[in-house]
Length: 200
Image (cartoon, rainbow, N blue to C red; front, side, top):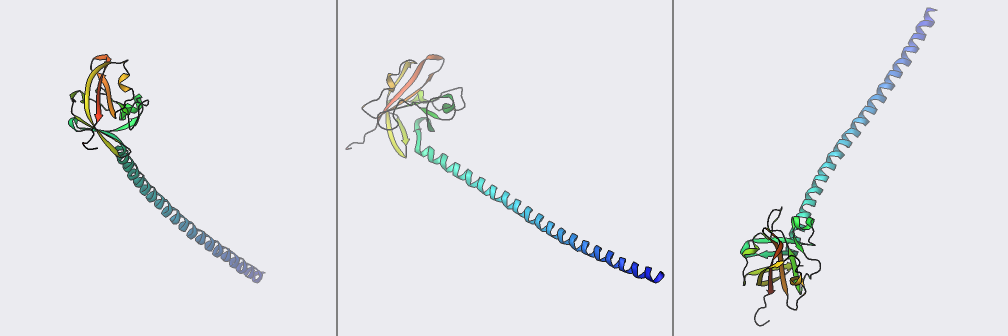
């Protein structure tokens, strides 16, 4: 009986040891796999963050380039009053918060180009100093990369209901309109005609 019990115990111990050994192997194999996967996942996440950062930098650079291109493509430049600003379509509040507005019913190239902007009390007051313009001053207007020089020919105060200065013209003309300080029923209107080089 005692001999049988010893053999039984030895066999049982062998199987227990075998089970422990197998369990240990499985555990460490799975642990190594888990750690390897975790390492790969962490590296992948870091690479994603780096890639996203690179893409953001590229996007910012592209946006910056587009802003520069837009400034060159459609803008107004009046050296006498140190004005250079982007132009955008329309004269809504949203447009004129950030741009010089273009009267949609007027042309963008040949004919009478009509533009408007604020002169005080807003985020951007691009026409704050146009009251300083006089006959003979230069206005440079750029659209689609082509720049035209206009010479101021008129500087008048008009009623806010007078739209005649925005009518199309045979000559290439530019018309700048803004409010008159403390006179809400009136508008300041400056017009210029394209400078034609002699012999052209």
